[in-house]
Length: 106
Image 1: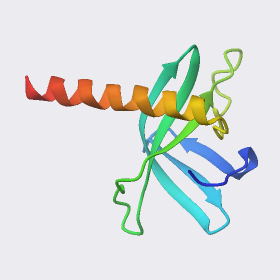
Image 2: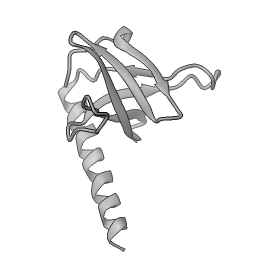
Image 3: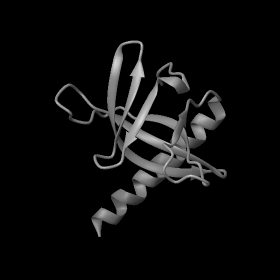
């Protein structure tokens, strides 16, 4: 996982389903793969894109929150800094991927 601060996140582009994240190395455009809940908290799975705008196989996970009082406000992304929380998020994401793969086999 990259070392990002909340202020490094740019706004989410709903039309293209991408988000721009600013790291020490510059801007990284990511595809939004999934938004899901674990233990009552929302998370987002992002797929960084290469220079040709192709999604890489790497997945970045962040806490995800929206302001329920203002649906027009940009969602917030926060780093996951607890190893147990991060492992629970990965486990849930893997479970969702397995379910999607099983559904595609039908």
